[in-house]
Image 1 (cartoon, helix red, strand yellow):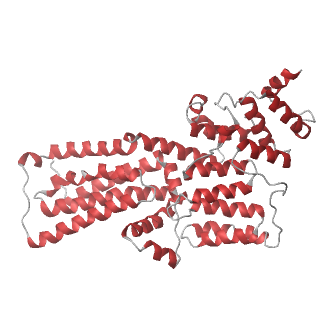
Image 2 (cartoon, rainbow, N blue to C red; image 1 turned 135 degrees about the horizontal axis):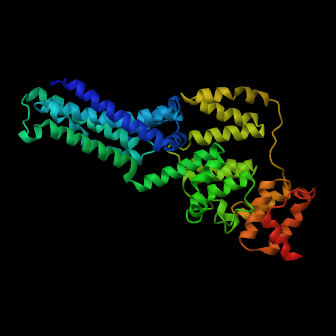
Length: 428
């Protein structure tokens, strides 16, 4: 039985197929990219933010992108928005095909042609400016095609071999496979970056076992970014001393990004110092991270600062950052959930780090050494410093540091890591 479908029904089938393909890829393959896109963005409903976003055309696109990106806090919504953008490009193409081609139903596959090129721009755009530009441009062209059709009412007739149903089906399948490959596999740089965003999100969730499962020792020894996440995971699990060299640690600097100009690396540094209970340095890294944000601030930085000042029991500064977050459509609920915690510290005295002789930051060994003098019972600081000296084969440095740390951490029969036992055997 020959079933004939109306043009709008065929368009709906294309739209459904595209939505499913794009949503599945973005939600499952680029799940943590969506998380980072929200974390590195910022949106406010305040009038000055709207004014700044409407001064120039590109800024207007950035403003619209910032409004959409706040919904990426829920990755399923982010995947839906990412899937809708190429569908809008396709629909603009269908408008042109329907207006200008006879038997347009058989040529709807032509509307898919721009989509593989569109997804290339979508992969590298964290602020959505490029994808939104594509959508706007495609609909401007569609609008011009419609206006032109009002004055010239002749349809274009393509060669007869292009009108075969079999060709339309084969071309559609070929283009859909090409889109799938282009988005999911072709761009190796995007795959690597997605891997780093995955490590970042897992670290934020304190899922150290999962990080170690995707950063085996052989990867850690050759990938400097992955190595740092692996060493942080080992430190958090309390197994750094016996595994540091296995994961490629050669010095204490291997756990820290000393000179970096990327927001993601600064975000890692902030998590590292949070793990080491160094909140002042967390704030410092947050300020450095926000330099690279499109609007000079980001949701990730604001949430970190709000949480840090709540930890400090600094009511005024915690309130400041919660108030800023409250101006966002999505983050208002996040801020409101923490209002009771804020009110609980209203009359508390801020509990900042111990004030002793100041020291310059920038050298990890110096920072950790100074912090050990202040907090000798902090096992993470001790493990990091001692493991760093062993990685450098600095036996004398290890012995001196161990003598200062042992009375606080190993004076009551606590188990001593095997690497420490082997190192101490050199001095017997």
